[in-house]
Length: 500
Image (cartoon, rainbow, N blue to C red):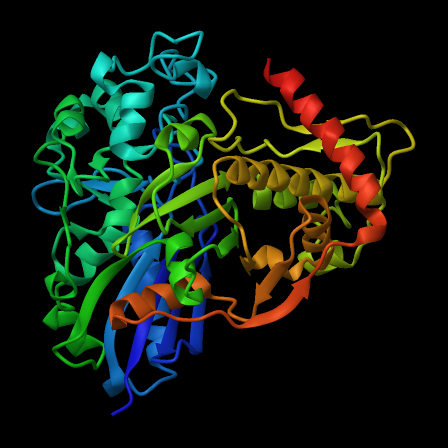
């Protein structure tokens, strides 16, 4: 009998559920906007019950389009770092606060909030340590922390959010029985089991990637030793969908549910990324990710802010650009049409004018860990003659220049970038993709698979791996190479000056 698998993708801006066959074909998809709701104590967030309702609404919608008797398993993927703490009865203690917002800055009367420069609180080697940073012991600072976790310190990681929770909401911390990532929470609601998988555990800064377990020293420091889910090590470890839900949805009693992993890594699974191939996953945050055939010098990776972790039995590397898709959203809000944000289609069709003196610094939603200091974001070099087409071109070129910085860092660390496979909503913007090809001098292959993260989660549930299906190849335009070279040189000088 033909088998189908559901992939659930809980993203920062959208929530999707797909029905996928064993060949990786997406047969049906349901989607909801991940609208944030203001909360007096936690800021813009998603109530846990609303998050679950959106998931189940999408599941029911997809099940209405396929033969339910063929559904064999479900896989869940999501954003990383963020999550939902639950009490002993399984009740959510907080809403979902996305990775790119700070739950402790919402109350304007809270003068003790965590609102300083994130890099001013990096433990160890960085200057200007703030008084509100976690008091890491020497054995857990900078290089030692990276050796355990593969992560460069940043306030978004789960360990820091938990530290703030323990400090500012002691009542909630003491009631917490377990902290669940976004994917883990959905799994818990569907099965009643508290479990996670390695790539999401890696993003908490509590997991030792080399020992492949929760790190004893870090969990003790965070007072989380008994408050984390078990990490599944084999396919048979994953639980079955609850009987109540299976019956309500008309499914069999043997539908297994798993956490597929971090959304970008599930996208890599959908495309079968291996060897020196690279995935460029474009969402609110854009990442470059690939896998090691052999682990290079860790110090070289650390010095360049290249993060590492484990997924599907392999070590991976990842570099991020948090302000990529966020920059496009910001640009749309600037280019109003009849008082409304410019639509995606209109933006992609709008003219793009090269303007050498105009620079865009793509850091409005933060900078990646390859940037050791916080940099200002926005436009530099605009004048009264600057118009919409120049602003659009500057944003595309800023994102492209930052991509070139990342690929240059990878090359210096000895990581090959043979073919770059691009997925995500940003790939539909051909002018942006052409700018990236021109400034990085790399060819980008956009894939026909538009729901790569959800498909990858479904394939994880099936125990399968997908393959790339190139739709377009965007090659560097040699005629513009001199312009790109000079502007990139100016861009690197400018960002270095701002970071000093």
